[in-house]
Image (cartoon, rainbow, N blue to C red):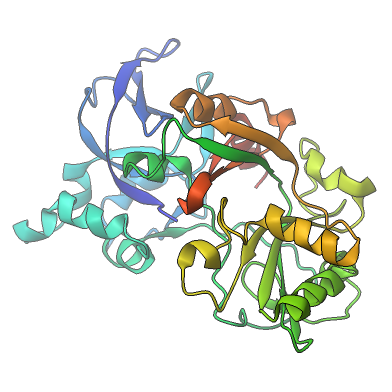
Length: 360
């Protein structure tokens, strides 16, 4: 997940209701900036929503000014400024590099290659003092350790990052699914009957009286049946919804299945697959979650619940934009599953994120 990078301002215009503010378009999102601070085509250091500034102004002096626009924890949010939703923070390159004496270390293009690589977190933390903000996870069930089977955390990349790198296959079809607002949950199943219950970051104690265990009932058996039949390890990834998870009045997902703890399948991870398209269960591969759901039903006669399926769409910039403009009551956003194993990304409702920023 890319939390900050150097980006080009695609368009800039005056704020309709503020004499000292402009609106800059960066990666498809609108960012409120100072009047005449930037112009079209300028490269800025763009910090995305849900990035967290560490706040050590001795080590990173530029954060002294940036922290004025962050929460007390240093988290960058989607905020409404004079009636316009602003997604993230844009800073001049010179400000970010002002404290660095070595001219060779001020190469933003070289830094951007590292920031937008597959694993940018360590570099981002070390040179810029930014990490990804972790939303408070519901304290639901005892953790017994880290994730098993070298299972990676379930992070969906934002469409902005893929759009910039040209990784979105414009004009091709994709599968659009709802992005539910609950808690990440994974069920790991092996052919020999071994299984693990996990949150986004930890393995949970099995059999305890909590939302994770209650949501896993019935689903574990389906995963184990598939693993035994195909003689493969499989990880079912889903969103845990329940009436007492993310209890915001604008979050309708908490009411799924009458508010009972429910596992909503949205992805598959195959630990033993060499091809990373198959390993990640991408759309168009035999291991996409809809294909696995069909196989489970054919095998057991039982239908596993998935996230809501919106349907196939043609990938356009207007499509992404339309989902960022959805009202908060519509939901948090969507996930675009690209066809033929290219990947996937999310497009979030800015109105939903803005409201979420007020309560978290």
